[in-house]
Amino acid sequence: MITKGLLDWLFKSRNKGETETFDATTDSLEAIRDKVDTLPTSAGDATAAELAKVPKSDSTVSWNATALGAINAEVDTALNTAVPATPTAGSLNDILSKAAGGNTFDKTTDSLEAIRDKIDTLPTSGGAPIICLVGACDAGMSASATTIVSDDLAGYGDDYFNGKFWLTVVKNANSVGNAPEMEYRQITDYTSVSGTFVCSAFSANVEANDSIIVLHESLPFLKVVDLTSGSGNWTVPTGATIADVIVVGAGGAGGGHAGQNPACGGGGGGEILEIHDFVLKNRTTISYAVGAKGVGTNTDGPAGGASTFDGLSAAGGSGGKSPTTGTGGDGGGTGKGTGGAAANPGTAGTSGTESGVKFMRIGGGGGGGGSTTSTAGGNGGRGEASGGTGGAGAGGNPGGGAGGGSLGPGATGGTNAGAGNSAGTNNGAGGGGSSGTVLGTRNGGDGSDGLIRIMWR
Image (cartoon, rainbow, N blue to C red; front, side, top):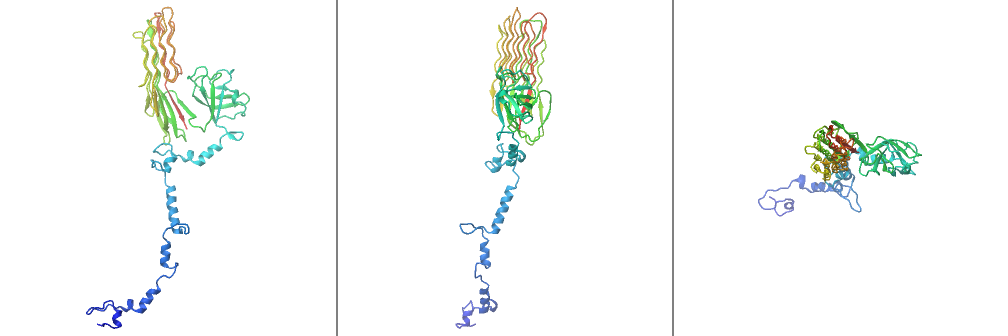
C-alpha cells in the first residue's frame, strides 16, 4: 500500500489497509482528458440539440419543425374524425347539428358549399334573389281550384315561377279558417301579363280577394305530400331530413232511421295530431294508415277510423245516434268534444281542446243533437275548423244534428225530412244526422276520410 505520497492522491481510497482502486483506463490523466474532449462546447453540440427538441413558444423562439409536425398531425386527425352519432353537448359537432344530442348534419344539404350552391340557384329580380312574394287574388277572379289570378304578382316574365315555386292561401276571404287555407301547391305555369298562376289542385276553390303567398322551394316545409286513403309504406324522398306531419282521424257518420221521429244526431269529427320536427334522415320508408270515414246508414252512424303515421295515431270520431236517443257522436281523441243531446232544438256539440307542443293534439268537435220537434238540430262543435250547422226543422219534421268539425268543417244536418248531409272532402269532419220523418228511410250523412299531410324539407 502507498501512503501519504503523490501516488496516494491517485487513489480513491486512502485509508490504511484498504485496497487500491486506481484504474488507468478510466482514472489516468490521459483517460480523463479524453473524457473532457467529448463534452459539448456550443449550442450545436449534442446536449444543446436535445434541449432544442423541447416544444416551446414565446416572443422570440418559434415551435421547432418536429413539434409543429406532431401538433399538425393531431389537429388533422381531429378534423378528419367522423362526427359521432351523439356529439358532446356544446361541442362543434353538436353545434353543426339541428337535433339536440344527435347528429343530423348532412354535408350534401347543410355544408357551406351546399348552402352557397342553393343560393346560386335562386331566381333574382333587380339583382336580388326572390324567395317570397305576397299578393291578393283579383276581385274579379273566377273561383278555381287550379287557376289563380293576382295582378299584384304580374310582370315577372312568362314561366318565371314554373316548377321552383309553391303557392299557398294564407287567408280564405270568404270563409276564414276553412280550406284551402294553409295548403301548398306547386306552380306549374305562369302568365306574366295577367299574373295568372296554374297549380296542382287545391282541395277547395281559391276565390276572389283571398290572400296568397308565393314561395321558393328552398324555403322549409314547402314540399307537401297528402296521403288521403289506404295504408302502406311511404317512401322518404331523397334528401329529405325533417318534416312537420298532420295526422287526422276520419269523421263519424250521422245517425239515420227507417221512417221515424225525432231527428238523428250528427257524427263527431276526427282527432288532429300535429307532429313537429319529425326526423326523416336515415329513414327509407315509414308505415302509415289513413282512417276511413263512417258511412251513413238508416241506424246509428258508424265511427270513423283512426289514422296512423309511424305508429302515432289520431282517433276517428264517433257516429251520431238514431232517433232512439238522437244524440250527436263524440269527437275523436282525449281532448274530444262531446256530442249534443236530443232536444228542442238539439244542443250543440262541444269543441275539442289542444294539448302538447311537439306532439299537439286537437280533439274533434262533437256532433249536434237531433231536434225533437219541428225546430233546428244542434250545431256541431269545433275541431280545428268549425262544426256544421244544424238542419232546419219544418212542417212537423225535426232538423238533424250537424257534424262536428276537424281539420275541415262539419256537415250540415238534414233539413225538413231530408237525409243527413255528407262531409265530403272536409278532412276528418263528421256527417250530418238525418231529419225526422215518417215518410220513409233516411240515411245519415257520411263522415269524411282522414288525412296524413307531410310537409318535408
